[in-house]
Image 1 (tube, protein in one colour):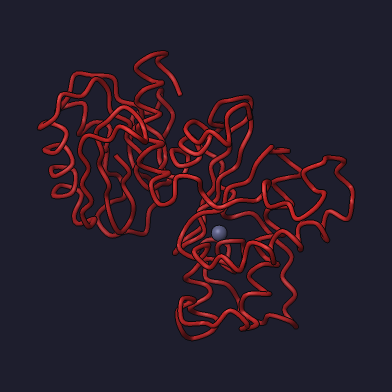
Image 2: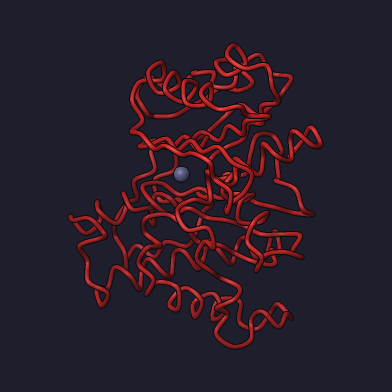
Length: 291
Ligand code: ZN
């Protein structure tokens, strides 16, 4: 189950080429939405379920609120314990992580092009920005989960006087470069801005800054960029060029030679990274008790 802020996707199967049934429906109230998801899984004989709702989540098994959505601005959802609701309904292994960690794990686990890697970072750049980090073959958790969508990035206020829209940090990465920021800065949705609009050069620069922070911190072998904003494929070459410029030859790796089109890539699983990631979580959890 991939539970997004606007829609939920539930699928039953054994892999990307073996999906037996799937549904998508809009995110409504927690009771209504979770009942619909539970009802779907009750109709199918499943061995394990991967639960991947939007965060932030309480992922600490020792916490009384383990399994809950925490500080979301989405009305009615803060404090909803998703894992507990499923535990009441199912007596099978239930893996639990954020939708973006699931998407990262899906991109890491399934695509043949990513076999043999042991690190990868997945960003979703849409209404908000999130990132899932895979290191040494595992989803990275710490105090909670990484919040790479909110890293600080350089903000030249002469070039871009926009204050940023993050309610916590104003001009963090999400505050400057999410789809919501694009719409607020330019007064219309990003989808309606033509390829040659100055918005994109600025956007590519912000994304590249965040990517450089991650490259320097985590040293991932691949970076996957998904989400609504990244549907604008012309951003990819702009971002790759800026990343190269910002790194300025500092990191000695052949991935930075040429066009970097195998290093900074769109999701191989398309819009199914999250749902297929939840499936990979369920599979791994059932087999090894952890993801
Ligand atoms: Zn922020």
